[in-house]
Length: 210
Image 1 (cartoon, rainbow, N blue to C red):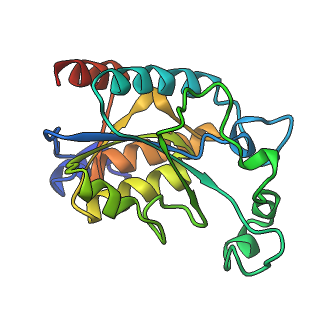
Image 2: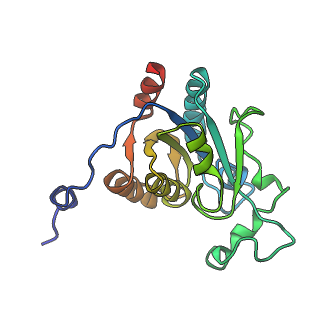
């Protein structure tokens, strides 16, 4: 008979809590029109609630002078190799051309001019970017990760945050995917192995205490 996954994971000692550090940053992963506007992009899903939850966290972070960093995926339209092999697996990624609307942040997000915007080529916000060095320079030890997609760029960013020595905190209401099944599976897996998946209200309370 199949075993209960919770019992299997408990026996393997998965799912312990990392907790919060003393100096957080907030990273908003890929909430760009290519992923949030289904009427414009085949890559997008309905992430209205996640955008709203992320804006709440942005406001709370800004009130405490917590660094806020945005990422988007974007490719040079004149260079077929700019995206490496990834578009061979996901051809629609080639729609995300630099200068196009699909690479623009969702206009509902409260990004200000001094908030760092990182253009990336692959899933993780860390891979091939200066995110890790920027966080280290700022003395950050905790990374609050919001955005999309849970099964792709959020998961990859959380995994690399942990690998780079940052405590990943993932507010459940502020991450989303284009389909429910991979979202739920990856929420479970992230919480078991790579970061703390918590309610957004808990993260807001943590920011308020800073």
